[in-house]
Length: 251
Image (cartoon, rainbow, N blue to C red; front, side, top):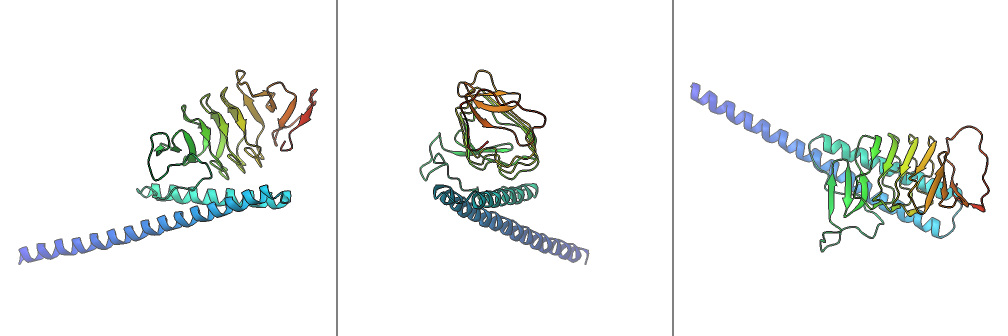
């Protein structure tokens, strides 16, 4: 009789384990489906944004689309973090307009990999999965892709190493908690919308060895300070405009 009871106990335990495993798989599948849907929506919204920009749409319409892109990107990151916290790894990554993403024929320079909080496509940073705060871009990264940090309100400061040469469109768009950015000597291209709608930003600091850009008291200029590129949105106090020839249209 005791033997029968033990067998029944084991069978009941196995059934329960099977039910729990099935529920867990369904939950994981649902989360993966949600991430896939958000990725598709994000791709579609980015396409609309690019179309609006190329078609000279009204600034209000572009701003509305930028906000939508940032919101969806933030939702997708939250879903991925939720899935990772549950002990699984998302199988879907956000589509990107960057042409250096991995193709059907893998190559060493375009392979997608994850290093801690960062997802890379070759040496291009395509996604940030961290908890925010003070963020340091991995040394060796050569570019920050489009919308990588878009909508992430928990990022407060960013350090960009000398290895990075470009910062993509809307890379930090609507990072409303971002207060300061330090950019290394290697950056030669900063997209005009890279720091749009960063309402807490007080300083953009450029390494003195940079050959394309410079900064003065947190204000971004070209190297020779003949063009004022961006005045941080939250920078307070008096400001004297230097002897410049022009101001960029996205200041």
